[in-house]
Image (cartoon, rainbow, N blue to C red; front, side, top):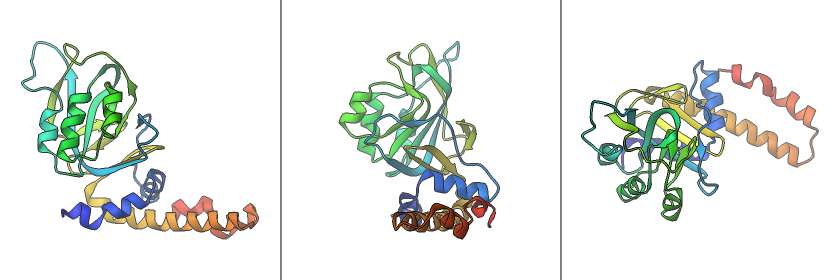
Length: 223
């Protein structure tokens, strides 16, 4: 078992992306992206360390590899492939062949700042895809893989190989590897407080009393 699975995976899986985002904001930095969501309702959560892919427009320089293949080959079981296609939704940068290769490799899922295709194939093999949308257009002649496992931009945040990627129905967050411990500690605190608030509400305690007791608006400023 690797370090992430041993120390952190279960803790992330217990939380939501909103817990993690709020925790990071309380600590003074941003981890949230925007506009990237699961492409099927059944895919509730994906968590793992990032293996990155940077795309570029097709042109005179030709790619030596089918896009995404090297990322899959470089991944360990449980990793998440993170694709930077600059938010483009006019061309796919992930499809059924890649999904099947990733599934066999044991990859947790893919998150795409762009669009995917062959969504039915991905659903059939239960391989989670988070993206801005779907499109039938092939990547061939439109985009190419520029590099693998390099610094990328993804939905407004930096992603480096090995950073922690988490996605659920609310969206995707990316936690810098060196800040995982402090983010998880704060996120656990926020999660417990919110769970207690919800329990009190379900028991019939007045919502204003609950808010006063927990000072919800100040929770993010409490280090």
